[in-house]
Image (tube, rainbow, N blue to C red; front, side, top):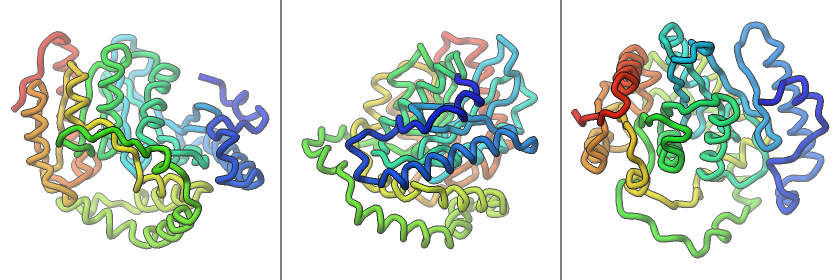
Length: 342
């Protein structure tokens, strides 16, 4: 990992955006956005009240957090991957709650989210999977248990399907996105679907303005068991992140992510341990049925239903943390054993 002083002093670097993409954002706007994130990274790193760190990935500033038994060679590593619109801050209750356990804990802001840079590029699950893999190689530097919520669950499963066992030891799906149906046909019009439409970007800017006023009400619906878990800090963090330069580009991409592999496809390419921690009261889908279906499709999965909504790791963190740490301990103790569905 590059040192921060070197990262902040280097000339402006546009490694995340190709020359062909300059039409999507003027050079002046791009330079201002780059400088914005450079300054924010410097301020965050110098702020003694935070433990945020920054990593330079493909020329872009990426925030992450690490804590726990980082110096212990025997402590397993866990990487938390957030969902669409969230950030590493969504796992603060898990990082803090597990920091005294014998675990190395990591959480990063995917490019385009949180306090990570938001370049004018094509955001896809393939880009985010590549970021996760490089983070494990360059920052964690050992195989991880990857824990993903919502679309972060899909990207985590995609990551482990492609990188087990070289970069990962197991996966934990938390109300994961992804189809459990038949494989989607290859899109012959991928490039056409991915072509940027500046009108759509402008609409996305308007959508951000609308969503900013509804953050709390949306989150309360996603936390049906404990709406009080929707804290002012959580609302403020999501609002702040949405005001960064480039936020509209990643929001616009959410409606046109190229569909490639279903969860069933990913399970076919994976043979490792799998834990499914699902909030059974998720208002977005029949989460209980989805979790049980995963157990059928991947019989080695251990499935646990929690009395929570779409984000059980944040709504009922004490229960979530206990189940996660116990599962990791079991897998570590018997690494060759197969998890049995419950």
